[in-house]
Length: 297
Image 1 (cartoon, rainbow, N blue to C red):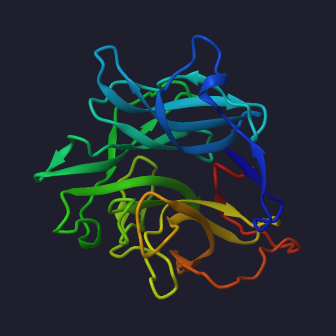
Image 2: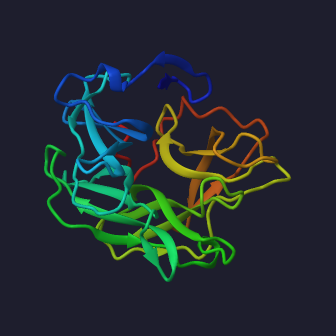
Image 3: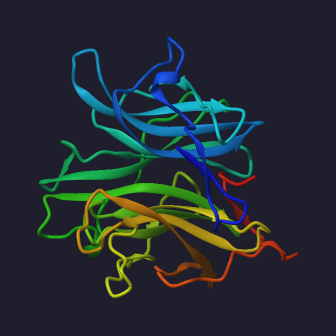
């Protein structure tokens, strides 16, 4: 589904951006679990990458990534490559496309934790692949970007360890990747950050998350983030989800927006917040310079 806003405050529901029943014959794909859509403007079109579950020819169920295209961010989006690739033995999910300054597209995605065991735990990892200029082909094999290694990402009492939900942008020549650690239903689901000098890495993680729970403020399990700019391009905002009821964490989640900023090159978040915040800037004549967000024109 799609909502739109002129100011990041008031939102209007505009309908389905993509629906599996509206796909033409030959490009229909996906049984259920449609999730994690990301839309970017690219070469005069809008491209969506999303996750869906579908059985393979042997009847095994897998999560796979699908690429769709539209003339509008509202849709309707039509599948153009489903699945985008199919050479992973594990689930693939949470796709995110970053277009570098030289026009090179990169796909960041997650290898799911279902059966992917590392040190005895089912583990989800983040990988990157270079894409073709039409976004329809992967040109490289999977290159490991991140896997759970920090203490906050690897709780001893959990059977799984997860890094997921990557989003990459560039600021002043350095690449920043936000990602989520822990499971989405945990109060300790949090947003971490890693940096690199090239999209293919190597990536270096911050020691601590940049966004985590604040139960006193009523925020549990903030995670799976992306970034956007204020209407006048002068302020940076993080968009993420958190548990709708912090006293009953789980799959029921809502969307949140908080301000982000840099301090000596370190990405920081003014949040999580639950109190009224200043309206995003719309009249500044000083845009935030040095930043490249593939999901913003």
